[in-house]
Image (cartoon, rainbow, N blue to C red):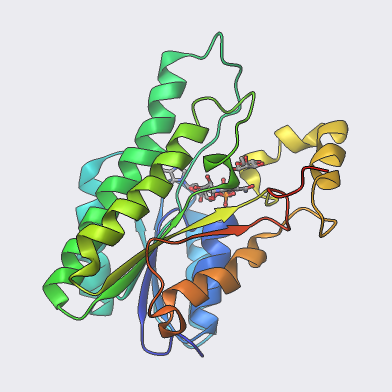
Length: 253
Ligand code: NAD
Ligand code: RM4
């Protein structure tokens, strides 16, 4: 029960890592507001899971690429749950595509959702935390891909490096308000974002073979690290980056 009576907001939480983290925070005692883009059924199911744990849950629809979504999400979540203690910026896309013929729209959409979306959301959450006056914890899903490249991810990896950098600069900007900002760097976690990419059996075996712990990740693997950074156990941790990748990054030979 590391998050008893805390209010947690998670973006992109109708499925995948976001949903696992939202439910995981509720298991640790938090009331949770989720943002979702289109998957109403997934969002409702996530809220039902949160409520089944005896916590309050609320789902608010919005496209994070639109700056208005950020102020709307934070305002409506605060109205429903009272305050914002923890903000998890999770929403993201990775439409795998080759570099030389990358469509302009794919590049721009990926930047807008992953990086601009993170910027506006984190700013809106921080404004609410500053107004409350007693600190908070902001966590962003960056990626192992902030540190290493990907042939079909030339549009995506710069956004994940950007999100990591955003947590470093906001850690400085918000330290005086007692707001901690940290990045999580998942390795390869099995979700919809890479379902098609990993349907290629050879690629999946190769990715698995790179992980010293011997398996690709599950969304639930992200819960413990998120709860830790959200909780007072991490009271002196800010500007940090935590790889959650089964050891993939350090595996040269
Ligand atoms: P996912 O596709 O299951 O989840 C992404 C979520 O973001 C979905 O709920 C989706 O609806 C939501 N979303 C997408 N665009 C949105 C928008 N415009 N507005 C609001 N919500 C939107 O994938 P996931 O693996 O759970 O990804 C979650 C985060 O984790 C992403 O930021 C991703 O970059 C990051 N990540 C994932 C992996 C991995 O291997 N799965 C690794 C590193 C980082
Ligand atoms: C991650 C990492 C994973 C990939 C997802 C889409 O950041 O690159 O390997 O499957 O993105």
